[in-house]
Image (cartoon, rainbow, N blue to C red; front, top):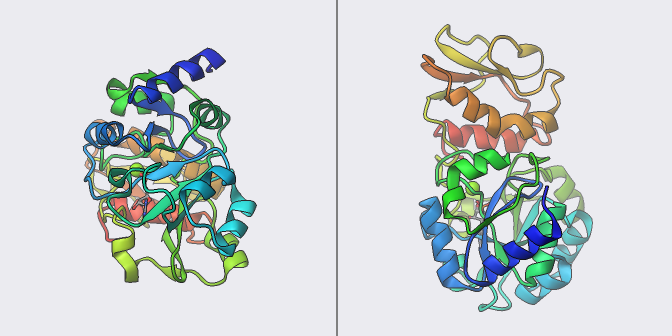
Length: 307
Ligand code: AMP
Ligand code: MG
């Protein structure tokens, strides 16, 4: 675990324009000063990420978020209910310097989130400004949910690294745009029904795809081909089971617990991908309710279907 000295070292590295491997409750991030275009460019370079994909500005609290983005009543309500936590809000930008144009991909909007992980929180407090922190994987690979996976993906690009243990949630944050009608840009650990209870029905992202350029169809991809909703795997497939579908291979959750399955998803996809002699990965059906919507979204992307 990290000491206050590790946090201070990482904050100094960020001030100098360096990158930091950062644990959050969702997945491991590759963090940089959101206001420093050179530092943000290093993040895109390290990830091999398309530069039109805007990044999330991570902040310590809602007061810091209000300095970056224009908050309306709906934003206030969602932040009060779910921050710190795995919900990102896309809002009109208020300060175009604090989160540079490159981090926003030139949009007049900004994505903001206050993460709950104590290490992320300590780093944001020590740094004193917004940090971009996209998932610490190379573009197109599953997000890292352990320190070791993050190091293997982009550790060589980092000036400092923080180990916060395995990520509790294991899926990227829910992304909601509050520009006109509330829109679900990316399902995540805060579920559709939790958000709709506060701001009413969520419109879909597809009708407004330009607002969410991060929704590339193939995004979280293992090397082996992936088959979804499989009841009966072939002999040459590695099996990713769920609940009573468990057998040889891996089981995302023997108890059929969606939160456990989410936390295991990316690590098990990585492990299954390394199975010697396997021709593919077969995944059991996952119920599409609650957190299952986010799990199925990531699985469809990993399988190469348009989300
Ligand atoms: P990541 O940093 O990998 O968790 O991905 C960031 C997600 O937030 C992507 O899906 C982006 O497209 C989305 N995002 C970030 N900023 C904006 C924005 N200004 N408008 C719409 N979507 C955004
Ligand atoms: Mg990512």
